[in-house]
Every structure is written in C-alpha cells, then in structure tokens.
Length: 355
Image 1 (cartoon, rainbow, N blue to C red):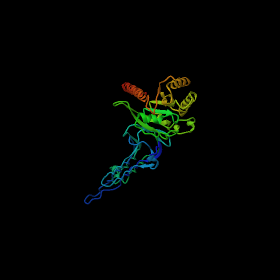
Image 2: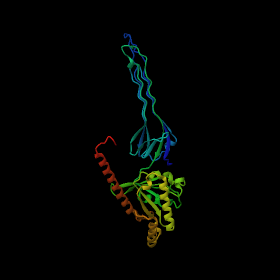
Image 3: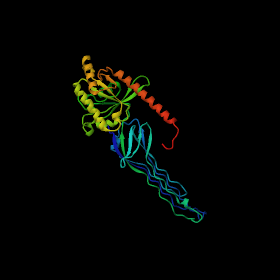
Image 4: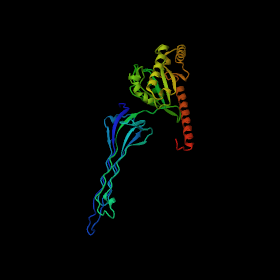
C-alpha cells in the first residue's frame, strides 16, 4: 500500500429542512388552523480515529464527504427526519487544519476518538408556531440553516516513543527489524526506506514501546533534497531520538561531519525537534576490531563534543541491541511517570479564572 501522509478533503454538513406551511382540513372540523411541523436538522460530519488505518491514501480518490440534509416539516405537525451524520475514518495521529485559514482544528490521537468538523444546519420552523390570537391562519415558516462547508487539510503524523535519525544506509531499517516485528525493506544501497516504518518493541512482559524509522536525512534536506525532510515531522511526537551512525564505513572526520550535518538539517526544520533528547547509536561494530572500534569511538565523541549516552551495536548480529532496548524502556517508563505526576499536580491546582 502506498504511504500518503497528507490530503485535502471537502466536508459538507447537511442543510436543515424547512418548516411546513399547512392547515388542518378534516371533516366536521371547521377552521382547523395551522399544523405545519418543523423541519429536521441537517446531518453533521465527524472524523473518527481508527488504529487499523496507517495512511491517508483513500482520500486521494474520495475528496468529498457530504452528510444528509434534514427533510422538510409536514402536515399534522409532523417533524421532518433529521439528516444522517457521517463518520469518516482516519488514521490515529491525524492532524486536522482548515485548509483556507490554516487554523488548527484538532488532532486525533486515540483509537475511536471523534472530532466534529462540520455541523449540520438547524431546522426550520413550521407555521404552527406562528399562531396567535391575532394571527389565526399564519402562513409564515422559516427555512432551515445551511450546514457547514469546509476544506480540510489532513496531515498524518505517526505516533512513536522513539524515532530513528541518521544518514541513508546507516542501518536504521536493520535496527528496527532486529528489535521489533517490523519488516522494512533492507538493501546494500542508500534510500531503501521510502516511507516511515513503525515497530513495536517488547522489553519484557507487559513492557513495550513503539519505534519509528524514517528515510535518511542528507545535506540540503531542509531545502528539499532527499526524502528525509518530508518525514521529519513524524519524529515530532517522539520522546527520544536515536541518532544512528555507521561507525565502520568512513574515516572518523567524515562520520563527524555527517553527524553534524544531520543536526543542522533538524535545526533548520524548526519546531522543538532540535531540542529533543538524542542518544548516539554506533552501528556496524561487527565490521571493526575491538581496537579500531575504541579508537573510532573516542575520536568521534571528541569531534562531536558529545556528553550524552552512547551505545555500540550491530543491527545485523544483534550485539548490543538487547541492552539498548532495556535502556530505552527504562527511559520511557521514567518519562511516563513524570508526565503522570505533572498531570496530577495540574489537576490539584485550584481553578484560576484569569488563566
């Protein structure tokens, strides 16, 4: 299936039905009076998050989503039928904006979460409501209101705890396939990853996290070179970035230059992605002797002036990956506890009408 992470759709809510204008005409009941009922409300359009979807490709072919209009009011004070609401399924992680004003409408981050994006029109009033002592035979009625019509920009941002960042062919796909059940395309040439891949990593009973792999980032990505910049937004919701480096293929100075280029491109991308915590993962250690590995590692950390966590692994053989997974799991659990404490503290604060 083709991965599509952006789409423009049009949503049209149903118009409200107009009120009825009729009079009661029955045998033996002279001057029966007005009996036109109200119209029905128009149907609304909702977006619903579905964890079974992972792309917006369906919206490339079906761009218009229209709810049913309400029916008109009828005689005998019968109210018109309400228009049917429609529920449009989108992947979890979909961000919704008004395409014309660029206003953020909201985000769908949980399975079966719903969002009202176009409200149905209000029903019209029948002539029975205009009867009075001075207006015994009113012919007035009102038309239903028009439903909302909006052009929406849908943007899918995958939800993951850990994001993989690195140059093409650094071994990101090999790593995600080793630690999870994901099966990305792996080959001995660059740019084999053409769209984000998600994998669930198990770190023991009832302990797991989600890891995301995006296409490699190259120099000039912020100006449109390569594929990585198109998908950097998918790392925006991660808790932690793993900067995967091929420690075996280049001289230390070249490796350090590439690592700095990636950081530069992430900074140019904007947002708070550059401030996200980042760990170094030195991959392909199986291609080096212990002596060469230690020398290259020391030279690289000195060139990068690196003070954070560093892990040496081989995504092919699996060496070092188990320890990395456990460290990641502990970090994520600690982050979850911190977020939980913050949420409780905010809930306990007294309400301040000024805020």
